[in-house]
Image 1 (cartoon, rainbow, N blue to C red):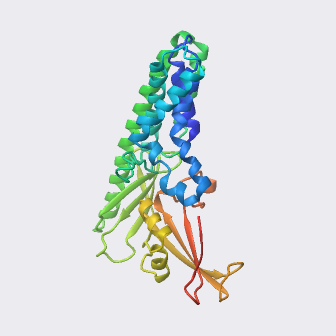
Image 2 (image 1 turned 90 degrees about the vertical axis):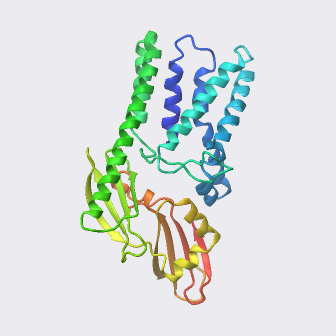
Image 3 (image 1 turned 45 degrees about the vertical axis):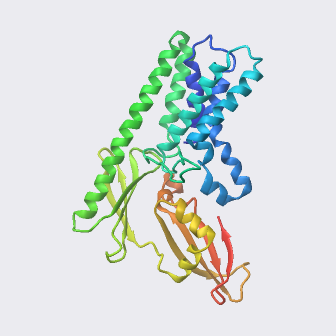
Amino acid sequence: MDNVSHSLAGWALARGAGPDRPAGTTLALVLANNLPDIDVLLIARSDPSYLFYHRGITHSLLGLAVLPLILAVGLWWGYGRRRGLGWYCLLAYCGVALHLLYDVVTPWGTMLLYPFDLNRFALEWLFIVDPVTWVLPILVLVAAWRWPARARTCAAAMIVLLGAYGGTSALLHAAAERAVNRAETSDGREVVEVYAFPRFGAPLRWNGVAIAPPRAPEPRIARYSLSGIPPATHFTDRFDRGFDDPWVRRALVTPAGQGYLWWARVPFATTVAAPAGTAAGSGDTVVTVALQDLRFTRTLVPTMETWTPYAVRFRFDPATGELLEIGW
């Protein structure tokens, strides 16, 4: 989830401690709800480092065990040890745990078992920016300001409503996957993988993907747009991964290509030959190979749906086969 959602959730939960809450309660919950995203510092090292290792160690169960304790000790000391360390530990652990829960329901994936297991857990129920995770905490904050005596009830209601919203999203996600599978198999096509990736406006909008087995004729990937309750399918297009192209194969064997294959859920490639421009090379053209992930295509607000985030581009000199540059 985005950091606005994390911050609002912590702020609203702090209201549940009541008007006589101890000093530092709000700060502890807001910081704890954002603490795992300290790994944003990876972007200072390189774009690939952030892409591959964001939601790694700081978002793992190991991080859940260590980070809140560090934060709790810092707050306990900073507030002059006027309140027991246990109180700040409770707030910090609750905040970090809620952050992990918020992130697991998105399509990016969270390496909960890092560094012992690099698999990413992603329920793919909600888009990374979700208006409901903004609106509910804001309503709690307004209600707690208006009726301070009912602040705890408001915070508890938010937790219940968020749980119900998550459960509803899970049901609609499963329904979207069934709808895609039904649409593909209704005319006799084989399907080995089916996905429903949330778009902005989820759980009412999804990108559906169906993948045929390797023995099926190309193209083997079908895309659908889904909307409504129950989700209705609208066929978009059908294409192949593009991995048989010789230039794509050159890109995939590089460390960057291998890393992208590990990170992406449904990777595919496109190849374009274009004027060289300012690129160094022995010819007048360069071949650009773009690796993309179907999780993050056509996901944003309608005016920006042609923008493709999280793509990596390899530029080759077609005359020599030399890899000129890699752009993230």
